[in-house]
Image (cartoon, rainbow, N blue to C red; front, side, top):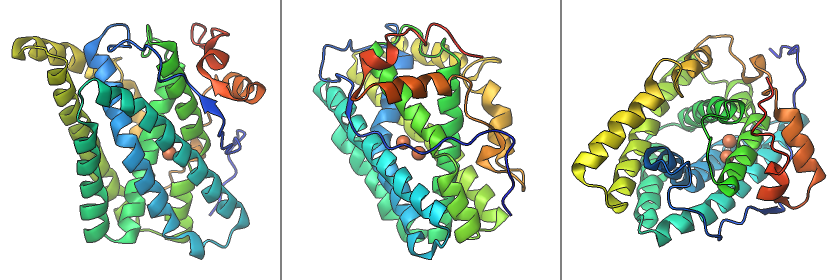
Length: 298
Ligand SMILES: [Fe+2]
Ligand SMILES: [Fe+2]
């Protein structure tokens, strides 16, 4: 069952001394002054705390059935990493609340959808499938955000540091939920595909719905918002834009023989890892002051 990948697999390192300075004077539209791009990342941030708690819960459903000692350790480290992501993104989201964004209602809706509906009406195997699918999407997006500096060009360095750190850890633990799904829950191929289809539908719908609310809170008129959406959706979906170059990686998940470690970590991982290991606590200035973002490592 387990194939040996031709490339090194990174350790899953829970980092708990983190200080990104998120209480500081971060501009409202921190991503190059672009409201659409900023609110895309902000909307994702509002989904993380409840979403990651859901992932942890769905993986831990199978914790007692895991006999492989290495996988048990991976589950523990995955849980610690996702726990920290929830804490940091809650600090991030407090900024949004202060701007008038109804983070409280967003969290409530997310809680109801994931815990009140999905976990109530779907099998444990299926919700683990949802987790593994979401982890795959997060991991390929994480790759894109750190390997293509133009995506986060002009970002406030504190928020960029949060996303770089989060992206690195998503890469480190990208196979954990999948391994539990396939090796422990022994989920069918059908479960894997259907759960991916559900996530592929739910994730953008939710993100766009939250962005629509945020852009209203920003005070844009209907006409201004229409223009922002037209320009922003083109940036996301145009050939060579944010998403299309990821299509191959996305569809790879549907191959029966797929494993997350078919793809190695991004080329810049070693540099970021070096920065994170060298500095404790991990801070925005420690992560970014060596200008790695300005020098993509291909
Ligand atoms: Fe995460
Ligand atoms: Fe994750």
